[in-house]
Image 1 (cartoon, protein in one colour):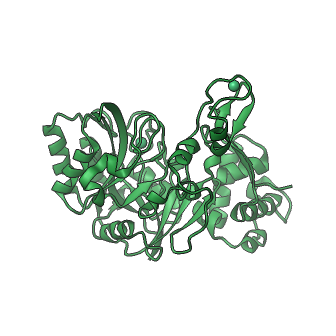
Image 2 (cartoon, helix red, strand yellow):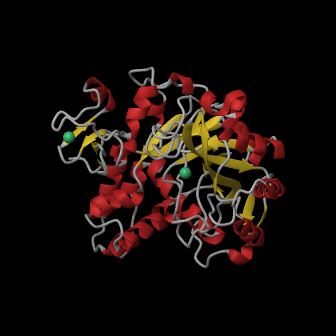
Amino acid sequence: MKFIADLHIHSHYSLATSKLLSPEHLDYWARIKGITVVGTGDFTHPKWIAELKQKTEPAEDGLYKLKKEHFMAERLFSDKKVRFILSSEISCVYKKNNRVRKTHSIILAPDLKTVEIIQKKLTTLNCNISSDGRPIIGMDTKNLLDLVLSVSKDCMLIPAHIWTPWFSLFGSRSGFDSVEECFGDLSQYIFALETGLSSDIPMNRLCSFLDKYTLISNSDAHSPEKLGRNANIFNTDLSYKGITEALKTNNKKTFNATIDMFPQEGKYHYDGHRKCGICMDPFSSIKHENICPVCNKLMTLGVYNRVAKLSDRKKYTKNTEQPDFFHIIPLKEILSEILNVGVNSQRLTNVYFDTIKELGPELDILLSLPIEKITNTEVSQDLFNTKTSSNPILQKLANSLKNMREEKIKIQHGYDGEYGKISAIGS
Ligand SMILES: [Zn+2]
Ligand SMILES: [Zn+2]
């Protein structure tokens, strides 16, 4: 079965997250987005697990579903399946080889019993798991991997957003230069890596040492609306085993593709100095020895710079054996550009929901809905409050989607704290 999964999110027990990150809202938003499997996030938190136990029930092997009595009143696409998979993120801060290391890891677990043993073991080791849904522990990441595998060999540890400067496996500030440097003789138990919001497949594939890993994408959502901004397309059994086996084998047949936002939008993508008006790609930076040609000081280096530093390929060439990847722009951003209104405006929210109700879940619209279907949609007079029969918003949406899918977009790269801009409206 083909389905979309977002394995890394957070609950309302993580710091700086939305109060709406509850099982019922996750179920509600997963339907709007077109996601079948959602990570629970935060499984190390005892209260979150208590809430999941109360509000969900076992479904397919290793997956859970929301109990009927917790369904939201208006539940779009109620005929679709939405399942939860037990996942968590753990932040490790420790010293190794005389340097402070900070990594984030996603952990998947096959059932609640396994989760409770992991919680117990962490507590015995004096790790505080009750204050933050994403706990910070003083354990070596390798020992964390050892711990979860000792509880169940079916657990999986996946290094999270591997290029983030401060908190990741390859982060420039406190990471490592290779998987082996971090995990040593346990490296063979690392099968997948999360590319994160600031990098995509073509960037990662510049590093041949990553060839053997399944590269995955998740939203790392801190509010339910952000679900699926990055996600994965599986074609396997709808079960814990189906999902983890697909992640382990890096086979396009079972792990079809990743869905990524354009990473150029990130505010630390390229290198440069905002004040000096200098923005450059990392390969040009290397030629300038990372020095700003205007002020002669070190430039602020972006995520791509770190990738370039560890890379051994100059150019990305598509390997048809490997899983596909799709670049998307969130539907709200596309509509915001079309309507020329702010992403947080009420008008946009109304148009967004009208579009979803008319055309289907968001990721279906972005990835696969035939363009003709959008242009031919007979919309009711009052949709979008426009009084004409041929709907100009839908015509423009069709055009933007076509441009996005063909990657005929205008890119302004993010750098030195300035967000990039992606435009799909065309000329
Ligand atoms: Zn993280
Ligand atoms: Zn400068």
